[in-house]
Length: 197
Image (cartoon, rainbow, N blue to C red; front, side, top):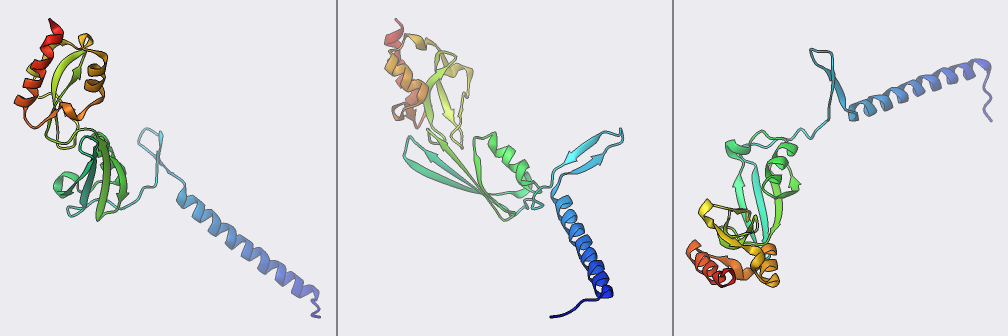
């Protein structure tokens, strides 16, 4: 058995204390890096800056839009390059842009970003629907979002006069009310005139 004299014990105590100080310093350094940084502006107010993923998009970042459409039971994928429109964006910035189009992010890197969206209607179709309790013709944009192209596409036909089943189909969406052209949709709207006599 090794015997420690008083000098050895003092040296071991000093080395242990030194190692404890180093371990504490390393722990505090790592913790401080993961905490938000506080910056002071010219008015003396503090603002918190969150640490973000430093990967920004480049001109060559590929953006993949996966769109699932219930009315066709199919999925359409669209691939675009970030180019000047979406370059130098953080993950949060580009997510906010596509949130407005109804997409949620599935994957993010500076090389590839994948978004997904579920929609009822296919892109570039004309749909009979209801807006402000009036029968109308919507156009689905390239992402399946419904828009009114022209104020004349809203008809003076009170949707509350329709049978409940028809009204529900026009509100929720139904494949029978999706058309390739506005003319086809307008002809179908004429069939509803019998309900408004």
